[in-house]
Image (cartoon, rainbow, N blue to C red; front, side, top):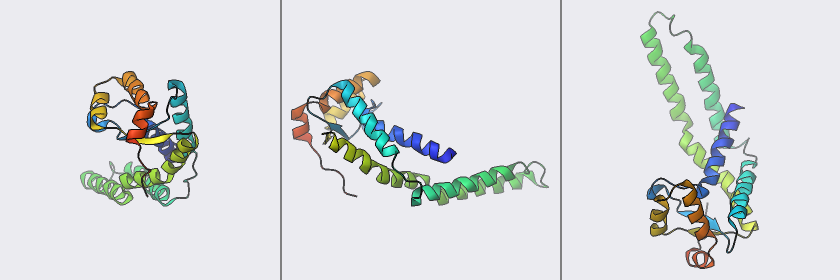
Length: 180
């Protein structure tokens, strides 16, 4: 259960990223969603609602979740064995073995790849929700990303909304959904 909760919380953050103000231009979103004339509160509420649609997608039996579950069980088993390290005949060797075992489990699980695979399962539901509500996917220009990076959190959100609600921006910067 711990893992499922952590995944949902992590994915909520990922889903809401286009509405967060970045710290650097490289961190500014490349793409976002907009609807001409949409008000700020409606924009934020609908983005949140669609993020929740994605998070409610049943991914429980998917391959990436199963891989992370397996790794979680292996890590728990390693944790329970850890208490015996101090009383072993060679605690340094036992500690080294433990650290190597933990690293082996992490490497085999490939958590970064699993999270990317989970995004591929969840994001289509979020995207379809945005489309169903009349939103268009658009790309931010490098200049827009740079400007956004200079703003604080709230100012960045307001700036992104300004772009996302501007019909001309949406028309000129419209982007198709990624294939995948």
